[in-house]
Length: 205
Image 1 (cartoon, rainbow, N blue to C red):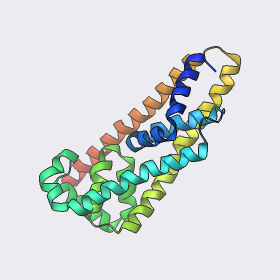
Image 2 (image 1 turned 45 degrees about the vertical axis):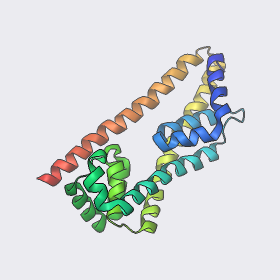
Image 3 (image 1 turned 60 degrees about the vertical axis):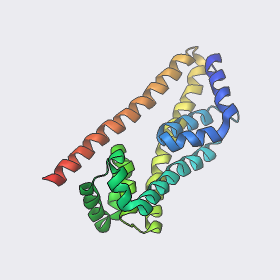
Image 4 (image 1 turned 90 degrees about the horizontal axis):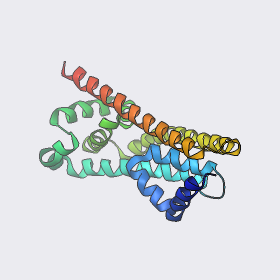
């Protein structure tokens, strides 16, 4: 393994799973892929199954927190703090109707579109979506999403090990992997934003 990359990995390992989990609460997909990447390198750095478990919890706990904010805050949240979360009365009314008609489809859309995630999950609480149903759907959406990024990172890590055996360009390969992860995250947010705009404009027509 490239010495520079090895030092970086060592620093990451010294902080362990706690830091990984905290970062997953903020940016779950990218950190999941990065954790799986390190796990694929071997050397007892990270256990792939622990990375998966932390990824699931890192997605599920914020979902529950946002739900609780909406459930207990409701009118006060909308009137005083709604603009901070891009929550308007009109958006609440639209999503409340969608949640009543199609909980699974609406929650899937909300979780997969970055700009809709925070307001959409809070509105789920405002709409009094049954907690058990909310958690079940959140988990059903999180499992394949976490699994996808886990597999993505793991196989990039495995490829890194194979390349490094024959070439001395480990640092370049590492940079390329980071760029790929950033591009994936960027595209996800970019097209998610466009989809959210279409939804809002469509509902206003």
